[in-house]
Image 1 (cartoon, helix red, strand yellow):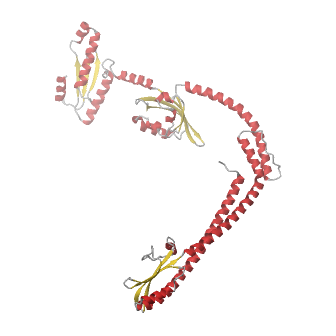
Image 2 (image 1 turned 90 degrees about the horizontal axis):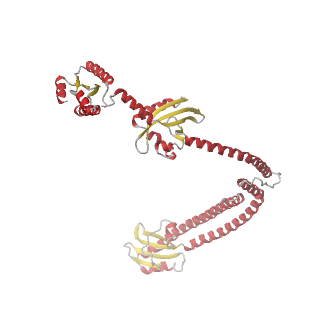
Image 3 (image 1 turned 180 degrees about the vertical axis):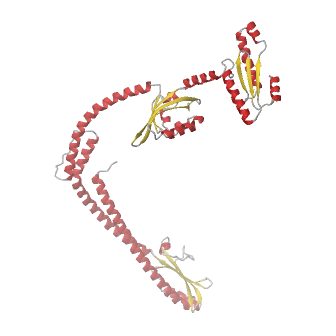
Length: 469
């Protein structure tokens, strides 16, 4: 609940008054307590010293009657709770007062330690001419000191409470007088907050508050005019937004805005869910793009982005991103890097080119392989042979070349048909792949002719491979 200004002003003054008066009462009680404590300790020290001196003759002569006479002078003294006189062996010689709960009490070191039982316990040795005669144990009742302190605290508290009540009354009266026009301003501001723009603040423009009220009224006039204009513009923007959303959602590409260095997305269109299977909110998470980049593309793509990040212009990158189902999708990133006041921004499209990449890879494969057996074709095999010959010459190693021709293959075609011949060729290719090493290069030269390159093999090894085939 929000408090009004006048209420906060009154509560602030009351709080300050309460703190100051509380501090004053506490300090006065503390000073009085300290004074009474000091006076009590001085009296205790003086009385204990005198009483110890008066007990010296009785202890020196071991005369219990003399000791009892000395203690009898203290009977009826409200400040004495008990007295116990012991000889040098600790045996009681004389006593006075109530020992219940105070048998051999431990001496108090301060006034605070005596407050728990209300008795200030003192232990003093009785010495005559340097010779110990015994011990004096005496308990002083501090109840009257506590009562005096409590009385002082109550009186000061009553005075402080009366002063606080008077301050509250005067503060409330003054606060209401000073804040009456401020309350009108508050009501006017609340009306503006509720968009009640026809409300006007009725305060004469005679002082600062009146000037603020007039400014509020002019502001309400301006807001009324502005609201009409904004309502019309908002309707136009809503129509434009609907057209743009319809356009974006029907484009088969993801529209993105991102940091060009990290590809931290600031915006992605709904088509993002179709591209990778992740919701738009997932795309906006930190490192979403980096975590789904194919490991083989990670280094070169990041290096390229670092080079382009500070160079405004148009760029295109093709790489792979992991789909939610686990496989990778080829993506073409078409984007423009712009320099803005707050930094650089990449804006563009992500297009799924997986089918295009599959077609390109198939074309490349067919350009280098025999479509029936999937072995290298003659052109690719000759390139591999030239490369292997150059490698063997450079490093002085031996390699071998096998040329294989199938006997009676024409007979198979003529008698069983070309389909059977094709199956025969595919079976031969499977045999070659199974019998040869992964580093060996196999090619179909055409028809029923095959070639095999055996790297790092001498004549004897080549002959052994040929016999196995």
